[in-house]
Amino acid sequence: MRFIFYSLFLILFISTISVITLDTFTGAIVNDADCPGGTTYAFCRLPEECNRVAEAWLNSGHWPVAQVETHQGMTYCFRRMTAEEKEQALIRKQYAGQPMNFPRERIVSQRNSI
Image 1 (tube, rainbow, N blue to C red):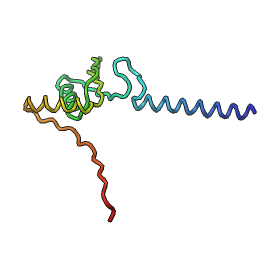
Image 2: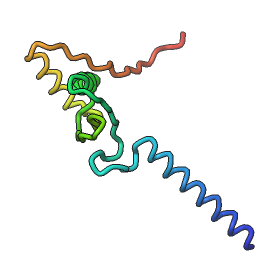
Image 3: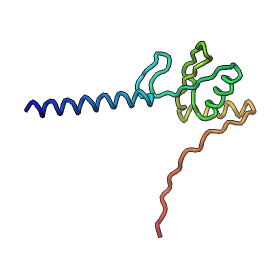
Image 4: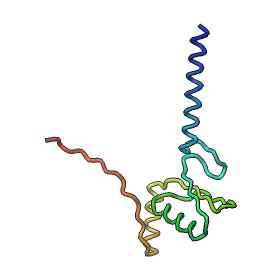
């Protein structure tokens, strides 16, 4: 009976540690006070590089959440834009005269297999 209890406990413990580790690596768990979970990090060193990095992430549909200045440069934290934010950003860019290229959303269509 003890063996069964310890085996189940060990399996649950290892599973929990695995899930926590994986979620920490993928960003699903908050691991930084300035950058909440589910976000993407971007690093840059020079101010010109930081401007290009931030613009590239904005053009790809990510919104800056936080930026932290470090001794090596700047760390940005981005999250995915919602559909409404993408639409507003696209309109804002078009009125400013700058093209903004968001990745196309996948469209799934049903066809006959005849």
